[in-house]
Image (cartoon, rainbow, N blue to C red; front, side, top):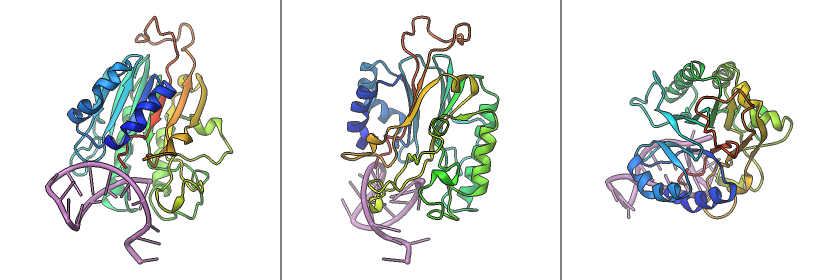
Length: 277
DNA sequence: ATGACTAAATACTTTAGA
């Protein structure tokens, strides 16, 4: 996160998101607040944090309300102890989840089994949650071969194996829509490019950062895209932000937590800027 | 070839990422 502050703050000022989901903050909560608390509150953001000292770490920033914060996932496994990989909050009537799914490292390894069990716990939480919801973050799974620059590039490695894709499909079977792919059904779109080998310049990437919305939220999507520009320049993350623009909730369909004076529609964004790389 | 980049800890190397 420290390394990404000079990228995050101008990006917030440029894109003006109402809600931001961050992953891989790699900061304890008190260090995050010390580093960014004033800058974020000056911009009108409330913050929900689930951080730890060196690895992982997720956050939600919101300037349209931030209620009912839940840190972590009930019943999720640890490795071996619980890790800071999930935080949820209700923002303008929408249940927002910021997630950093375990990497899995090597198929069939302990970490891989952890990843699958963690995804099952995530599914259970989202499945019993509110109707209006959006699941954002680094899923560490490319949903299909079309989400990898070359299906053979990561063959037999994590992120593309059948069990991982099945776990993601089980989550989506709750009725979640992959709103970016729905808007760009045939395009070559990626959210992650390895730092090595000039992969970004060659556009050799993977689409592993997703925004998955329940039907009522998906119906409000006006635009959904990957902010490739944010992967350029000095000291970028190796992931690009995913941006989702939503229309206002339809009349009579607003949840009880929607502020009556909310003049602009919520625009949840799943962001990977803070990867301190 | 387990490499190529990048970041962070207590750190001058190791670990992790995907």
